[in-house]
Image (cartoon, rainbow, N blue to C red; front, side, top):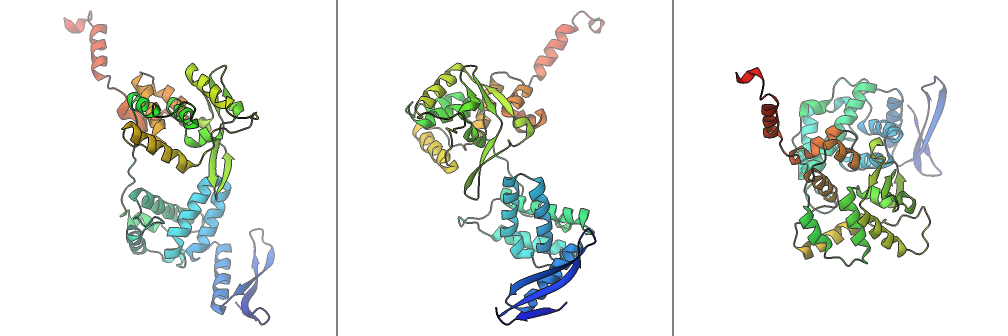
Length: 363
C-alpha cells in the first residue's frame, strides 16, 4: 500500500484502487497528511470499511453507523447520537480495531466516564452515562448484525455507571393557581403557561404552533409539527411520534385568552409562530415565578405531567389521557402514570357482591 510525498504542499497522500459494492473498480486519492503513517492508516481504514471487516477501527464503524442513522432517524436524534459518540466514545476507543475491544476495555472506559466532567464542570449524571453506554452497545450490535463481529462486548461488560433515574414531578391545580397568579395578564408568559398546563403540550409542540393551528371559534388546537433548535438554528420537524399528530380541545376561557394574546401581535400571518422562545428562557421564567409563588420547583416538561395528573384526578380514562398527550399507545401512558390512577379493587369487590347477591353462592 504505497504512500507518496507531495513536495509542493509538504505533505503525504495516498492513492489506490478499490472495488465498490457494485463491483466497479475505482481509484481513491486522499491528500493533506502530515505523516506517512497517517496516510497509511487512513488507507487501511478506508479499505477495511469498504470490505466490511470487523478488524476496522471503531472510528470507521462510527462512520458507517452514523451514515445509517442519518438516513433512518430524525435530524435531532442523529445530532444527539453524533455528539455523544464524538465526545465520549471516539476519544477513548476510536483507534482500536472493533474486534479487539474487550469487555475489560469497556469496563475501563465506563470507569473513565464515571470520573469525567461535562461542560459545566460537574460529573456526568447516571442517566446521561447510561445513554452513552447504550449508544456504544448499539454500535456493536450494528457491527454484529451487518459486519461479521462475533459478539457484543458490552453485553459481557455490563453497566457499572448506574441506571437512568426517571423523574416525574407535577403541580396540583392549587399549586399552579398560585404560580399563574404571579403574572400580569398582559405578560406573554401568562398565556404560554396556561397553554402548557391546560393542554399538556410538549414544549416543541407549543413553539411550532402557528396562528392557523389555533381555532378559537371551535376551541381546537391542531398539533402536526414540533420546533427544535439544531446547531443553533430553529427547525420545524414532524412530531415525536405519528400519534403526536392530534387535535386538542381547549376550554373557552383559554380560547379567549389566546385571542387577547394574538391581538397584541401586529397583523400576524397564518403561518406566524407566536410562541417561539428560547428554551432556557422558559425555564428561567418558570423558576422565577415558582419562587415568587412559594411552590416547589418543577421542570418545563413537568407541566405536561401536571396536565396528565389533573385529567386523572378528574376521573378520565388512560385512553383519553393517552390521546390528549399524543402518546404512541395507552401502555406508554400507563407506564408513566399508572401510580396516579386510583385503585378500584375494593369497588370491584363491592359490585361483584351486589351482582351475585341473589345467586346460589349464598345458599
